[in-house]
Image (cartoon, rainbow over all chains, first blue to last red; front, side, top):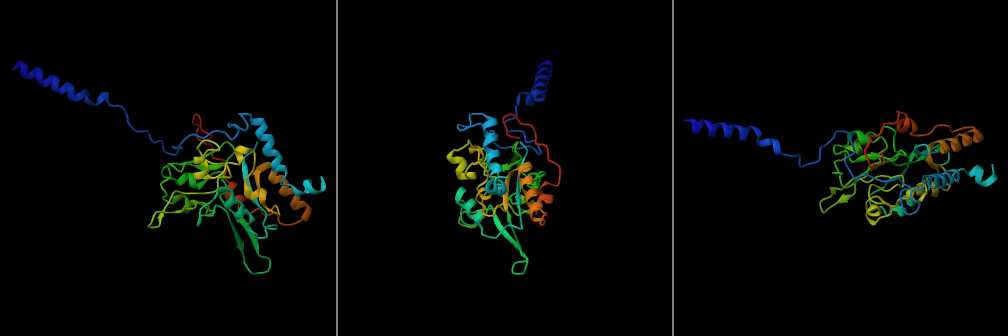
Length: 75
Length: 207
C-alpha cells in the first residue's frame, strides 16, 4: 500500500513538471512588427564605408540637380 | 536629411513613358510587371493630364498595416520596402494600396501569383547591398550608390521629382511661382497626409 502511494506520488510529480523543460522552438510572432531580415543603412557599404555625411552630400547634389532653373540659368 | 518622396507634376508630364522604361531597364523587371506606369486622366479630351504612378512610400502605408506576415519595413529615409522571402503573395497589399503599386508576377505553369514586387525607390531590399541576390529580388540599389531613383533622374521634362521631400517641395514651389499655375500635387494628400508612422525599433534593422 505504501509502495503504491510512493509510486503514485512520483508519477503525479513527474506529470506535473513534465512541461517545465520545454523551450520555444519557433520564433515568436509579434503582431505588427517586421519579421524579415534586418537591412543596413544605405551608407554602410563598400562605396561609402559608413560615411553618412558623404552619402548625404552625394544624394543632395543629385536632389538639387533636378532643379533645372538652377542648372540652366544659374539661379 | 528629411524623408524621401515622389512628386509628379501633371502640368509637365508629356506621357513619354521614359520613367517606365528607365525603371524596367534599371531593374530588369520581368514581362507583365510594371513598378511604374503613366496614367492619363481624361485621355483624348482637351486639357488631359498625365501622371506617373508607382509606390509613393506612404507615411502611414496601408500595405504595411494589412500584410498578414509583416514582411514590410520602413527605412530611416522613409522608403517602404519588403522582404520577398517572407511574402506569401496573398495580394492583401494590392487591395489596400491606393496607388495600385504592388505587382504580382505570374509564377508557375498554372498562372499562380508570385511574390509581390513593387517600386523600391531604387533602394534594393534586405539582402546585402550590391549583391546578386538583392539585384535578382529587388533590382538595383541606387540609393546605396548615392543616387536617386532612375525614373526621376531620367525624366526629360522633370515632371517626376524624387528625393528629399524638403528639396523637391522647394523645387516645385519655385516652379509653381514662376509659371503661376498648377500647384496641385497629385497623390500627396493620400500618401503623405497622415502623420509618419513610427517604425518599431529593431536592433540592426533600418527601421
